[in-house]
Length: 276
Image: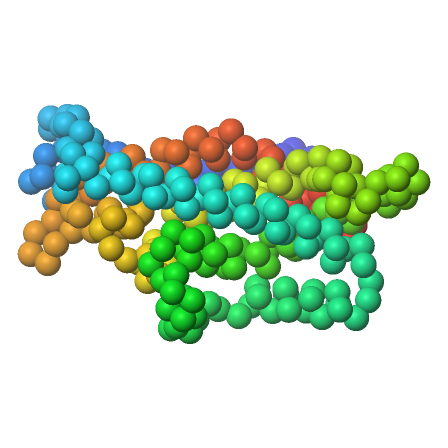
């Protein structure tokens, strides 16, 4: 027993050390360099700054005609509308796919699972948005983000709905509830744990998305927070102090969100694995 405890303690220490090296050290490196002057930051060293340059953070906000403020507005709008659309669509779809057992829902389940494996195609997506005359708009970007996240979110909702007793719905039907009213008044309030999981996972994914806005949402007025990192990287010279300050600033909102809801992420994902 003593040997087992020692091995467990040793494993805990090794795990904590590995987590520190993987997650904490890079954050300290970025934070330290964000407080250095340009010359010192360009050396890319882990050492503390010789002089703390706090004005780097204010300079990031004012750089390039306050583009970071515009980027924050675009990223917040994109995140809010995308997550809201995913909650509405995926909760209803997950409920129907779990409760109905016919050939159509089996085919829909197969297509949903395929969506988890098939990678997105950039050129066909651009061709479709151009054909619909919505390319380069916030609406098209929201639709793209929703389409990319739908398969995984439906899977989460479908698994969680399987843990809800069907007797609750039968009681609702007896009391005269129609299907939509029964879903809104009885089922959806019970989906709070998985909805919290969907909110945090998709908010982090959409807010931190770099590739899709780069391809599908071009233009200075459409810049998102991740694309502002380009402001401080050039072909001949780079301002790593401002780049790292920008990284810290755009990390803070999602870091706070993750700290608040981190327990709900696990609860929502594990609850659906019990049944369904």
